[in-house]
Length: 243
Image 1 (tube, helix red, strand yellow):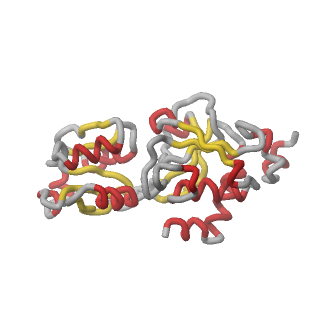
Image 2 (cartoon, rainbow, N blue to C red):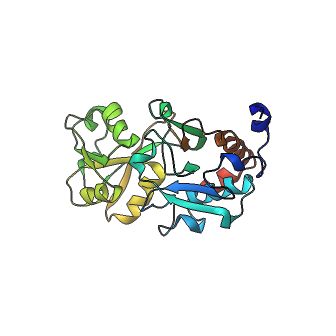
Image 3 (tube, one colour):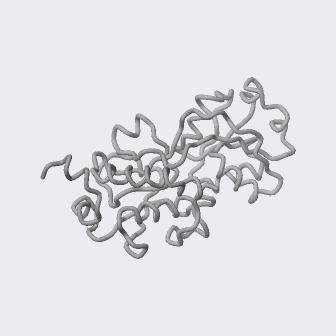
């Protein structure tokens, strides 16, 4: 039919043809998933910011909680090209022009500021001017914008150590294999509750980075999801969920 007319209608019945599985919204994320984005490693419980956002978007699109199905998608494969076994993925995936060539992103559902986490007895806690920051050994999770941030913004003398999972990065900090890690501020704040003696040293100025819901390239459902996000922004829901 007429695509602009179809785009204008975001009723539940109008979007059925765009769904991975009719009658349900299929949302993907990694496992394990971490606070404060998810709680108790259960995307289905509606707790934690990303779980709550997924259900709020679903609600805007006319799905009940029981009509939301969660699928598993490793972070690293999420932004690879090709068909997807989900409608959208929610997993702290930052928009980037390179990624957007092969997948489609929604508008921002979270504006990101990166932060620096270290042990409080580390010299970095008192010495973290831009020139000082180059001298430390960093670690981060493979494929993340935090790792890119270290390389492009901090530009350390030593190549950062790269780990498979965030848990591995946290362990490396705890055992002093690395002096510091970089991650988004909510994750940074949560990590300090998990690793004894760790602190958020500093928050970096915003680079305009943001998280978007990720779709297969060209998936038309993004139009209606953006409409849902705009509503959730204007009615205060997103602000309330971040609080």
